[in-house]
Length: 323
Length: 253
Image (cartoon, rainbow over all chains, first blue to last red; front, side, top):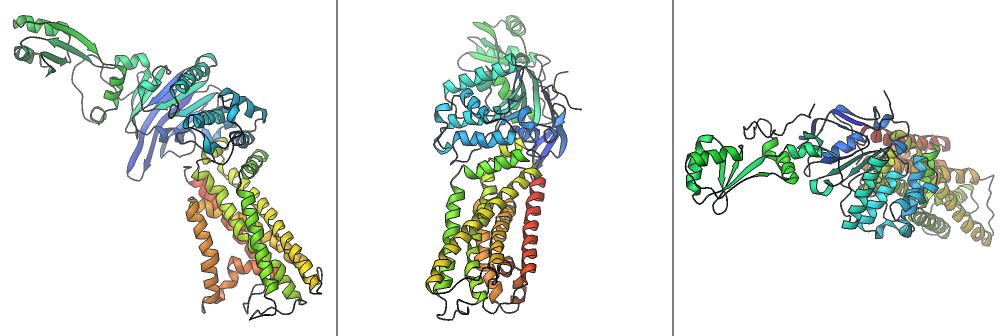
């Protein structure tokens, strides 16, 4: 059933290259009107997934649909979806304008659109030069211009920040947010660095080793982080003994500091008070977004059958999307 | 389909490849024609006097030598997409991959005809004044020269189409070009020379091309003109189908 929603739905997709399971039973949904980050370490299967969404690779199992249809069944793909894939795709001897003219013809859009997208990405002054001499940032801009030729409702960008200078990243961030929030387009941006897209995305889909490890808003991701109690005592050895009955993981850190995970400041303070241990500091540290991301995508925590610490709170990373 | 043809046409004319290869094709054709005329009547050249219809056909149709550049252009037209990953925007904008291949085959064939016309023009420009200087007139209609030259257009166009199929098969540009050249310059001549397998030679593309264009080759027996044309068409169709099927069945890099 086709629709004009701009929604991307990936259901149960798997892809194997020889012995390598690139993507395993992956399901997630990307909604319009928001920028969605598609995150995971290098080799997690992001590009493979995007290639299957875009019909360049066939999944071994499962389906990926845009507007309710597989990419190859879209009636006018160039006007529905614009994609920028990781390696830049240009003939080095062709000028930027001619590159866009080639694809304007294929997309069935008038040639004046070429001038418009060049203007949009700020490449008009370089339009007549061969792509050979372009910097990485200019190539990224030209890739984006190519994706925008058909003025698509859905934008899919694979590592678009690669090679962009800080100014370019700020520009791209503003553009993508404008597309999603003001114009209601669907924007899916992949990255292997959360901090790179942290200020751009509204929600995230995180995969590791080809499997989904988290799907939700950025705030939900923050909540998925663990809490560490940091406690200072002039007698750390005595404090360690006092904490032993709690059955928590206590790790001596630098100097007189101990990091305790899986508990609360109240429990640690109470244990110290009961054991008559002097405390000089007692505070709670929430792990940063980046460290939550690292925890989620770490091999040890995502390996099947390996349970993390057994604390009931905070919520442990779940391998299933929130209901 | 019009969109795709326009896109493929623009791909060809917006890089230097097509006219660089065109110059090469014309140069090859010219050298082949000049060699034919210059060596006529000397050494072991089996060709008869310049007034012979077969000799005249052989001289003009040697311009088909430009086909080497046509197959290379066909190979590069498709392998450059894989090499520079332009295959991605190409197949993103037209995920019905078979149509992309058909557009490429048509543009390659059209380009082949352009190359063929240039080769024929070069051959005529060299042969007519040179033979006139020797007091020989070409028998255009009576000696079957027109048919020969139409044959050249066909041969060069078919080789460009075959190039697309070869390019899809190998994907790697260097491997595809080298394999094609080895086949044309080493394998086919060897087949023609080795007793025992020599009998199969008339069914190879080069021999079919010679049969179609009316080129003589030593004492080699060739197919009839129409058979050569049909066989060559079959080769074109085979490689076009190969390119089509492989593009549909494999993932796009």
